[in-house]
Length: 67
Image (cartoon, rainbow, N blue to C red; front, side, top):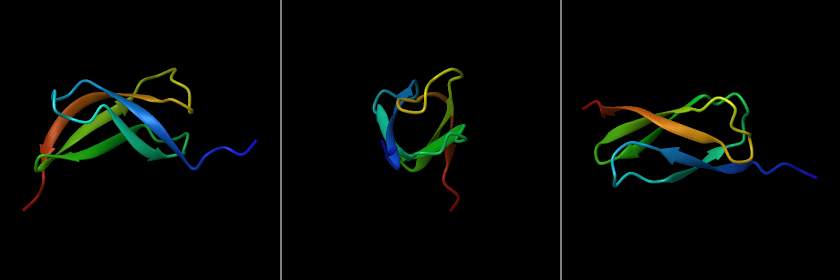
């Protein structure tokens, strides 16, 4: 069976109005992702032990976009 190119990742933590999921490329080595949200970026890191078909990422910080 072919593996899909993208998976739906669960996003945990962060602002209450931030998205709860994100579609990401299917790369087992993706440890960190950032999501554009309200003029900045929400940063998430992958939780250890989560599988590649339903990865879980926990919020770590917010940064502003450069002007």
